Image (cartoon, rainbow, N blue to C red; front, side, top):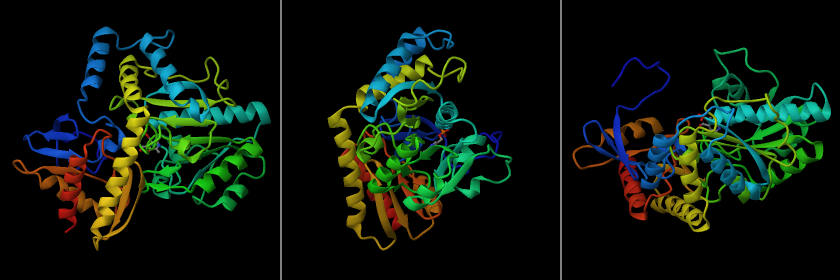
Length: 393
Ligand SMILES: Cc1ncc(COP(=O)(O)O)c(C=O)c1O
């Protein structure tokens, strides 16, 4: 273990060396069942053979060209990703490296759109309490959680927060001709897998459209099939103006994307935006494998089925320590009586010899979050939940 890292993370006492499928192995050879996917990233598990092959072949062929040019693989990825998001109305894409960077791009699109169409002083971005949009100064400004708004000010101006799910508050916040965009995480991940109601999202879409305010869906965590449809907005039955993606999009290789539909697809023009590594060929090659694997009806249906199974098993325990279970697809959470973090710690320190540990996630003090790889088998799902049950007992 290295002690030269900045102290930014509260890390558990494990150091991994390799992974295979839903299993990870540490420096001592102990194994762990992964119910976290590196926070919704390793959607195809670890060392997924087609992904490994695509990355290795691409690394041997071409690993970077600057954005003066296109690469064949980034072009193919951009086309395939835009096509995958076409049912949600998306027309064009900008490739970046992370969720925060994708959201920065979305904010720029909304502000420029508003400036061009409605003039100055209409630049505010409304977001929801409990949301999480990233760690850059601007995406922290967008994040509706006070805990992140300390020590690092001044923050980017022009963001305001309203309670999630309160349509009257949204209506009021969008009033006054000062708002460029409504940035929403329809299923709030970091604050405990809290899905907004379909009616709320439908109303919100109408309110935004009526005032020509861009509706921006942050699908950095809930997109890419995680909830059982390729984009979560598809299940909500609405077409946002802008969608941001990252995390699982390249199965473990850094990538981010901001996509725009009819209204906003032509807003960013030459020189408006850029990113040295955006459209990186290795990330694009990995992203192609994710798209080809995940964006198929039977595969997405399996995600939904396994997600329902996960929730119904936990509910079926009627465990006195489990207060509530919720989620969509393989994005689920359980509120528990005990503190979550010590349980996460026990879940890894219990690994010994052939007895596996379990990688879990927390969200807040008393919530467990489950984001297993999509390729998890029923038997592995049951095995992980059995471990969890033992820990709760
Ligand atoms: C919904 C959402 N948006 C944005 C981000 C930021 O993504 P990144 O850490 O890749 O910058 C996250 C990360 O957890 C997220 O869950």
